[in-house]
Amino acid sequence: MTTRSHDLVLESEDATAQLARALAPGLRPGDVLLLSGGIGAGKTHFARSLIQALLRVSEDVPSPTFTLVQEYDTTAGPLWHADLYRLSGPDEIEELGLLDAFESAICIVEWPDRLGDLAPSRALRMEFSADPDDDQTRALRMAWSDPRWDARLPAVVA
Image (cartoon, rainbow, N blue to C red; front, side, top):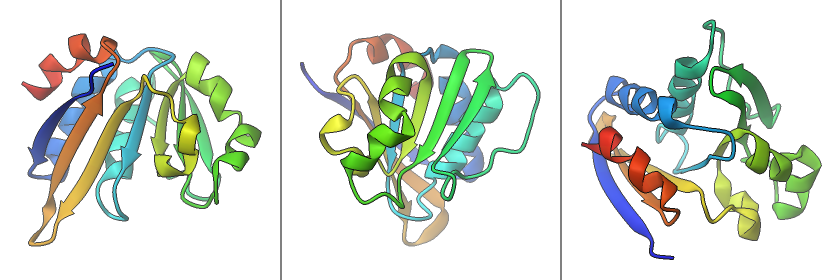
């Protein structure tokens, strides 16, 4: 499979939230978003905005840093938000039920490096990085090889 990518500059938190809201309506169970980047790069803000866009009724969307996984019933189906920062490796992933969720839910995974070889090849990889000179601006590289993303991303990245 050929890997494709697209780079964006998100000039504010609102731009990050707008991108999440634009991507949300096209998501379906089985879609996996792998969010990488350092602490403070914008991963959780993006995830919260995307989840809020899919909720039937607005609710608090906490970071799953300590719970590891938060589950939501959304207009697009079940959604799992996982933060794997505290895990030491892929052997702990199966205990969470995340592998099954990759097939049956929309999954947003922060710190996907902890997945190792368990990361689904069909995932949309999103790498956020903060601008050291501007605390609002984020660079985002999106990469994918599954053709399903080709049809969904043009409206988002236009």
